Image (cartoon, rainbow, N blue to C red; front, top):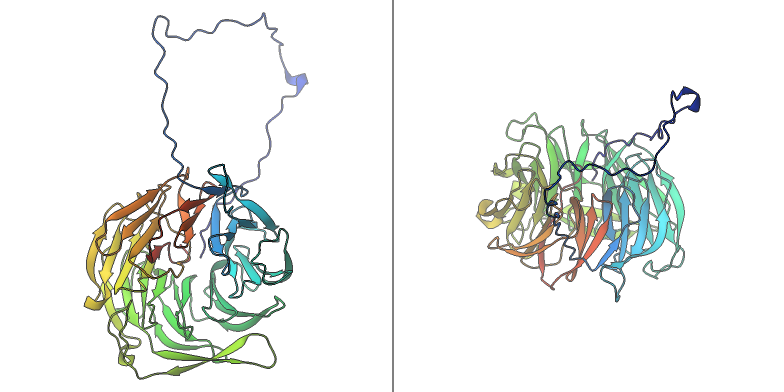
Length: 471
């Protein structure tokens, strides 16, 4: 995931007047009464500005927009990693209790080393290693000095290694079960890295099938496949356990059934790993079937990571989140939805119900019934004015509640079945670029350089309407 923030030209400083160039010095005769120009008229009524801040805590150390946000796997909702347009990342802690509201988040450590915006990051499964990635192409790893402390110790992380194989990182996604992550680059390449216990990064795969920027990618929840899409209009599903990577599904713009204007900008994989849906720059969504896989982790003797063996199963493909599908439908286009008029920035499957949600720059959130050929179930108009989403979707807990954010500075929750608004939280002075959540907290990344923490009712969450990576 990445935005492409505008460059910040250096300030040349105020222009100074050379005393030798001054023609005349004007001496003051004292303070003179200023003419208001409205003698005899009453003063204008003062303008009332309503400031609403529903947050319980904040973090304001960034000096530019926050583009990356993740939470510690062993301390979700409490230990947070943010990265921004100021080329740095911060680890910080949400205060458990405070007499002041909103309370200031506790800075744990500042992470440097990047020369451009930090647009992606996160922790390995055990929380001992964290990764930061930037528009400078750098990927940096940091190791916890004392493992198992959930990152709560100030300055408790040490830099380990750095790789820079590409000019610009677009997105990063961590494997759901292993210490592996994938990234997509502006040149279209896809890289898979294994993270050793020492924190060293080892290239496992480098794939070059895309011919345009790789805008989004996501691991299947069962860990068997990696699905990536590109501005060139292509989609690939990769079996990365094979040396060099093997595309088990491949669709390109050369196939007129798959072609869309502007290419693909977002992707999501169903919870049963049976289907992937892509969102395009022109507002069209398409669903493709994926081959059924089973994964058997086996520990190697030469590294501390694991190798995944992928096999094809002949079982049926029903289940929550995607609707009926079978192995015979792998690689087949299952549905085309032309419900949006502008770029589809976010896609998310429900974990417990046969529902899919999409959101677009056109301001709409659309909910589809995946068990009925992805027919439209609900449309939520003007969910957020001119919504802008930039964070990759996080796998939420089970439930029926949909969460969204937008450039109006709000976070909202909706009933995923009826489309009814359940709550709205304010506090940002500019757009919300993304968020992570737990059952009781939503932590946001703001275009106003601030991260806010909102305490919410313990609704179960059906989907996270933060966007597909890359746009």
